[in-house]
Image 1: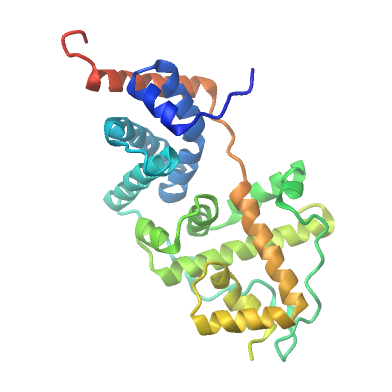
Image 2 (image 1 turned 135 degrees about the vertical axis):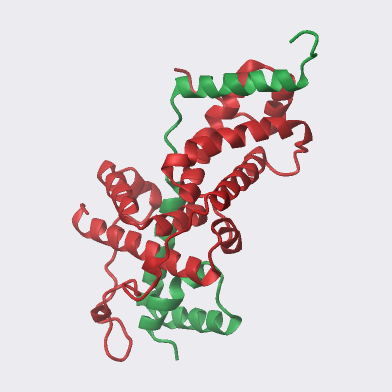
Length: 207
Length: 86
């Protein structure tokens, strides 16, 4: 298959408005995967597909009013997030907060620090210092998927929306209907888990 | 004075999300200036974040793309097409 050229927004929108069938394929090919991941983070895997389908239909309906003030991606995601939030409210599905209580509060075991609050031993030096280098290891990708799977649903939701979708904390609170304090705790824990995995991988090459 | 433990265990990720008060933020900055262990830790945490941001999406399967695209195309034609011809 020949590599496809990245499609620029203005051209793509013009082709969509002109009703060119291939334009719809380009649109879906470019954004469907990311939309599904975002939807799954909010509403869970099971309903993600449906939410994304609804978002696509809503987007096509509003296409005549797309003014190009934001990128097509931002515009699509605002529609998607709206659909997902609506669905979440309707289902009265609650982000379970049971893991917001006491527990593994810190990133590191307390014995990583001395009584006076200094490091007992310095954080290990990491060999791979760039995300590209790490992400090029097949084993690392597997470990990353594994650790993300092991997060609680709520931790995975906020982590995905924050790091992958790049949403602000206030937006995450709004979409998931949880407090800012909870979002912060969930993010802190989720990052701590991923950090611990990367630290282990850097040391041993496995997780 | 902010300790390494406080920085790592409670303030680090809020610092990355710009959720600290200016006073806390200044304390973290000052601590990072004088503590190379914590500087290393913060660099590593920033790396963890960019890992997650760069995780790429597997492309959707081609039959799925075509099925959805056709549905969207039909809907758009129904909405904007001339009703006499549809």
